[in-house]
Image (cartoon, rainbow, N blue to C red; front, side, top):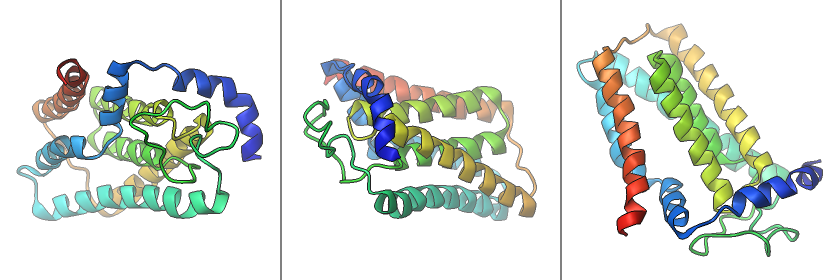
Length: 214
């Protein structure tokens, strides 16, 4: 059944993967990485913890860690080996058509996307906890671009990304319900929310500027 989906999404995938330019190659290569997001992650964790009761901070950080762990383990260690569907870069019908960046081809299997699951899981959890529309929209924009970057790099089909995002939404919501069952809601000032929102956009802006000067 998973292979049959590729018949319907073939043209859409090849079109999305084919929107290449040297500028976007550098941008999406960076965006899809992990190290580049460490400063933002550090800032957000500090903003979430600043002047909050240490016990509540511990439970909040545990909720974040649990969400990422569930999403990543479900995608990488259950779905990928169980479904065993090749990534586009390893699929016999696509590997010669896929545009890759820096020779990166990823692991053998790609269903479902752990990038999509992790990013949408984190966006869901933080949106539900922080309850700010602009920050929530920003986090989901970040997650959506992160998911698309995997198609751009040629290592995931659309039918890897969409189920991955759905898994992230589900686990993010379930962990939020578990977290709120045991802990009271944390409140943050509009000023601090604005700083967190601005930090996400500032990081994306830096990534957009980097290829111009690299």
